[in-house]
Length: 372
Image 1 (cartoon, rainbow, N blue to C red):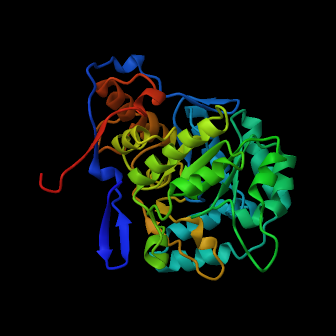
Image 2 (image 1 turned 90 degrees about the vertical axis):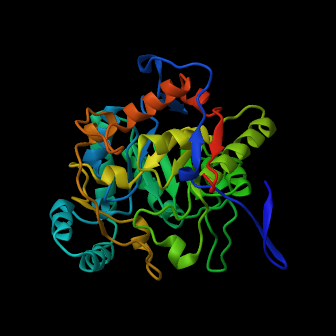
């Protein structure tokens, strides 16, 4: 990709967000009823290419079960309020009645409570007993201490998630998590991320991960970009990770690693463009926080609020627009683009002539000219 000169001694690649892209229709169109949104990861098949963000405002044990029943994958954050408080619902209801600054301060107080292993097992068991795929998320620094309790609960998928995850973390304070060794010893598939570059995605794939999560500083009450200056526009980040997947497919003799895009997606059109850039599925945060069943009760915050020294998540108001079913599957009496996301994705695929997610990954895309 062409570089631009920022100044003497420094140049940079031009990167694109999803808003800059459009999917080019192919020579055919299809009946939406003939389009499949299904995807598979390891032994698990999902009817919708949707993963819930592991954030307390989005995914509770109950909402994870609901999303699983609708065909997606719900991921509960093991370090959230569900593992720290016996009755978190009343606490989250209290927060929803506060203004933004007070809500953010109160959240940090709730996250100061210790994680209780018995609650970890209890919450995940609730999901497992429902019969849907049970997925749980941890930050890399907490994996070693808490994973045994996830194993006790019988999880199906582990998500190692942070704003930026690398396969080569270095620290003088102690031995960091060795992802390659850890994943190699597990009996469950692992999704790991975020990442936003070709090289990082490739290194994470080489750890044995079943999927990589793409997106750093994705927005949605996440102030990482503003506080740290770290972030990559999503279209370029996804395409780079998809390129890393092709490289790894060759060097591994055919092992396919899934790419899950996280950040900045609000509509079914955004989802379609993310897949056209190479994603297998999308991880949604704010769109699902707008559901009536969302534990945030009309609010959203990123889990970076957990950071003890430099918290970056803030609470923000998110208007409730419908149920999880209406947001994901419809029907929608009016459609501002944020309801019936699967229907919009299906129609986009039918309109442009692609029958499966794998086919849509090969779609031609164009970048809108700033002169238009």
